[in-house]
Length: 393
Image (cartoon, rainbow, N blue to C red; front, side, top):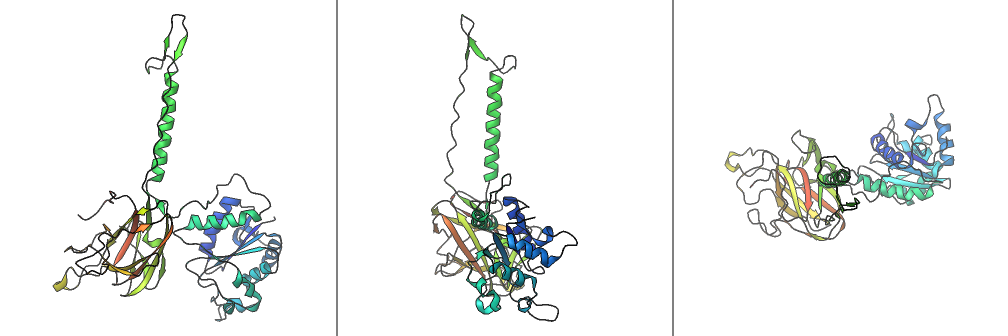
């Protein structure tokens, strides 16, 4: 079979990310267009021969680069990319030697390798433009990749749901519910109109009858369109961010997504969250947080409960949980984020923190300030009356 898109990846370190990417691309273009060795090679076939034949006919090669892509070693401790027979090296070399578009796709926080990181035969790979695919923006990022691949294909497949670039990665609160309610309302309206036109349904008079016996249909009222909401709300699960040690995700059945994040050591670790908003305006950031119980009986309220926050490359500022409140959050609790902004623990000058944001992409970075301060989820909204359930009053 002739394939048009080839997915290359390091088998022992990036199989999960590559499999998810493959599923998304096949959903858009079809299984007969996208090749990945696990599903594309029949039992008993020669692996190297199939790779050579497949790459010969491809229009696009997607190279999945994970953090261990350049550093992975074999059983003897030798770097795999330095082995001329390494399958990943062979795949990329073959792609670079042909008239085929090569797309480096960076996953799990990987960085684009430089020429110094690569054997000479792969130096051309370092000049290709990389595309970062993140968990928090997966649909959007894969949509961008798919849009770049689509013009290279001989024909566009039909009957497959696209992984669209327009789909924002973070969840839009209640959007699905609103669409469903609107659909039910339209269907119900259609059924009611039909019943009004059928005699004997028990739904009231069908029409007025004139002296000549000609029925006069009852006019159907024109539905009033629902105005577009002026508010935009984005939800982010903390475990969907990108982490640098000692920040990491931890399991908790009481957390909204089954996990939360925390830094293992004070003044260490970062979590990066990328999100899009649709409307300009003043936004508020809600956080679902908790903290460990203080082990110091003299300072029972002085448990670890702070992060440093930076929004769109702003200077990091200190965020204290429950600023000015003599309590601790042993249970998960929603609160609006407030920042010191030059104030102190007891006097936050940005309470709450309400940044002016433009429509488009944004980046929020949290740095661990105290060990084990815990974050479960974020909600970013321009609705001044919005309050999540579980807020501490």
